[in-house]
Image (cartoon, rainbow, N blue to C red; front, side, top):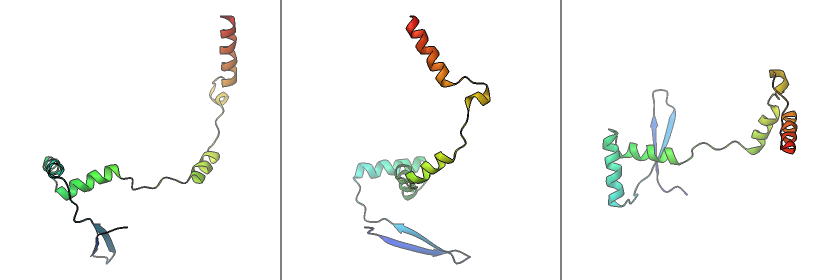
Length: 103
């Protein structure tokens, strides 16, 4: 459950943009100081640095459903190695097995 506030701003086209605000987050002093140093090194604000770190570790895109992945896989064009002048893998395996028997 989200426990924060939402800021709503309007641009010139009157489109609504929403952004959640995270507040009253209690950080250990050493962690805050480290975040502050990172922000200074990047010439950014502590808020911008915290957002960048969160974006790098929190997945924001959902994975494709398995059904969609399977459908894409089934719809891919199948390639025949012989079309490219390559040997059939079954033939190569048989040759390897024959070599092992001879050793």
